[in-house]
Each structure stands twice: as structure tokens, then as C-alpha cells.
Amino acid sequence: MDFEQLDWKKMKGLIPAIVQDGNTGRVLMLGFMNQAALEKTLESRLVTFWSRSRKALWTKGETSGNYLKLHKISHDCDCDALIVVVEPQGPCCHRGTLSCFALDDEFTGPEFLGYLERLIADRRKEMPAGSYTAALFAQGLPEMAKKVGEEAIEVVLSVTQEKRRSIEETADLLYHLLVFLAEREVPFGDVMEELRSRHFK
Image 1 (cartoon, rainbow, N blue to C red):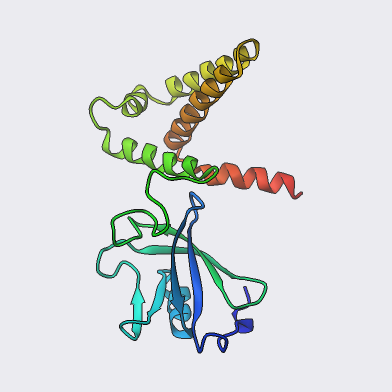
Image 2 (spheres, rainbow, N blue to C red):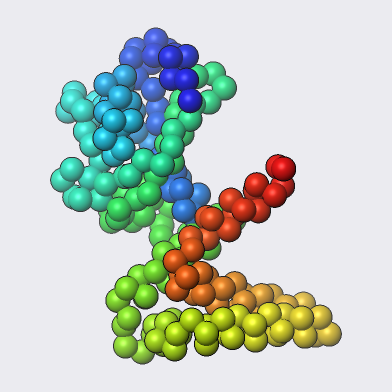
């Protein structure tokens, strides 16, 4: 990405930076960068802003530990705004929510899949008692793969039933597939990238 084209004059040395979760697609926050903040972000791979209230550079997470690990940055067609794609290391908002724009139980489009993937990863790490997801991990990969197969058959069989049944069985299949991918340590983003690469071949 060519950052030399950026229009720093329009907002007197600042550019709005929209932060997006690379795993879920959720918009997390809006900050402002000057050239020094952009350079530090690119160098450290931790998102840094210019704090207009403190009149100083501010690396998100330096106090809370909830850093924003940089995945990529791109600018818009007018070169006067940035989209910063990140891997958040915790809640982004000072309220303790993932996003400054929405509550944690509010989702748009497919972003819930990213949230669910993260929740499943937490279950795998913590293995809480009484958790169905943890019980699946305890059974091991062969049993998990078998469960994916069973759920896929249920989707096929739902073709003779009402549409609601297809919705329910597809939800079961997606959930068990995410559990299987977590055990295989395959990010769902890698599957999406495979689909994207096939489409644009």
C-alpha cells in the first residue's frame, strides 16, 4: 500500500482510522492518526493513534493490555481515510465491550461466525466443566470428524422436511465444523481465503 498518496492536509495533519476485526469483520472503533502514529503502527505492528485530548501518540492497549495487533492497513479512494484490520487482544472499548459501536450480542451478517470461532477457541483452552464444546474436544479428533459427518447427513435429510429444519441442521453442521477446525488448528479465515482464491483464479 502506497501511503505517500495520503492527504494529510484535509484535516490538518490527521487522518481518520477505522479499526476492523480481521476475524469477524466487526468495526471496533474510530481513531485518528498523524504521520508519526502511522509510522509507529507499521513499525511496531501495534496500532497507535494520535490522541487529540492528550496531544500525544497513544498505542491502544498500553494501559489495559488490550492491544490491537496489526494485520493490514489500506486507504480509501480519496486517500483521506484508513481502514486498519487488526487482531484484537481483548475488548476494544473502554466500556469493556468488543466494539465501540455495538454491544457484544449485536451482530451484522456473518460476523457472528467469527465471534463463535473465538468462543470455541476459548472453550478448547479452558475446558470448563459442563460445556458441550469442551466435551467434544475431550472426545478427540476422530469423534469430532464423525460428528461433522452425522450433521451433514442431517442437512441432506432435511430436504424432505420444512425449511426450518434445514436451518436448524445447517446451524448444527456449521457449529460442529468450527469445533473440528479449531481442533485441527485451522482458522476459519483460511477456509474463506481458499474460497476467495478459487473465485478469483
